[in-house]
Length: 382
Ligand SMILES: Cc1ncc(COP(=O)(O)O)c(C=O)c1O
Image (tube, rainbow, N blue to C red):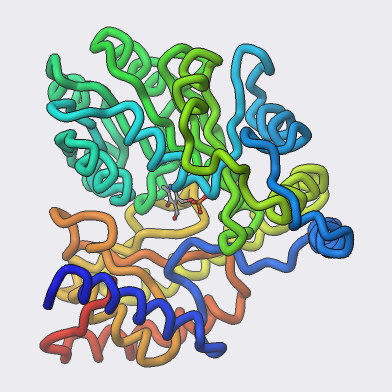
């Protein structure tokens, strides 16, 4: 198969999934809670006014840029928010702008793989620090990071809360990572996509303002994944580097930005119940996992809207388990989406979904486990 044929096969796989209305989406950390009415109203107003005829301002609507900084409690002026087409576009742009041939980007493994591809396309080398281990709490130990720093280290990509483990870095670790980065002359991308689900999450930016790019997503806490809106936040000088030639220089979706502004305005009234429901879903999954020998959650409670279910003690292949669930219209994610090294260890299950979906997942766990044990080979899952 040519490379493009493989890429297009992956596309057809997801196209088939989005075309199905019977799928229970427990595989992509999307949020399926009903939105606050104000969010829907903001979008219908935007459509009724025909605002979509316009290009949004290049850095984003000012009201949104201000609201993002306020949400992060980062001081306006000291930091600037640049609205992007989802956090991923900010990550792409940051990797391509800040890295060049011969540079090294340090990442935790497992993690989120796309920025590694962006870094490699920029000619950089990706250096992995393994973290899938109880001994380090499934998060990045600063000393392990420091041990891999070289004079070529240019960027540290820190996913925190970590996707897929659900662990967060402690406040002292964040300070230490900032110190290590500054001493190495490396920048940090602090990917805070799941921050809203965490308890006691610390931003790195206040400790290393001149060298940190903080990413922001509306896909997870607000549930706008299909609308593609997010942001990168950095101090003015670094923000200027990112704002000079961004791929979304004609602005990000104005419809999405209106929804995001309304979401931030109603966050306090809406989000706590959504978060409480996903925490209760985590608990249900934990109970179902405990009933099967060899299963356990890597981190509980998870600081993201998902849990990593370790299946390595049960002799179950993650891909076979995902396939067994997909046969029953439930999408969960195989460890291989997050790591080559730890692909055989875990699957990931999203929790910002209706309770009934989680109940269906839990009820099926014994049967799907048996089916996975009996499966010899699985088609590509992506
Ligand atoms: C760690 C991490 N960063 C970024 C993203 C992408 O976020 P967005 O939907 O805002 O582009 C994801 C999506 O799953 C993610 O897991």
